[in-house]
Image: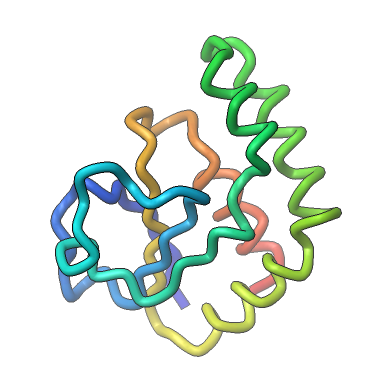
Length: 119
């Protein structure tokens, strides 16, 4: 199974395979038809509190944010992560779709790492 990441604002392609939206909120300005989302795994996204903290922080705080999100994935979001891993195993290619503008500092990177450990 192959895991990929892609922004919600990029064009969906058949090569994306099973597309999973991993944000708690639907991406602004993206229609459901255009997004072509197969599963919305909002419970694997960072908690609203952590999301607010991250949006108010600088990129220098990325490590701290990532650690807090990993703790959520191991704790309160563990069952949602397990459910996502079980679903991912059914597909050859899974693309984690996210809305963040920063492609190097976003929760989908941390989520992908956590999923890889379960797969």
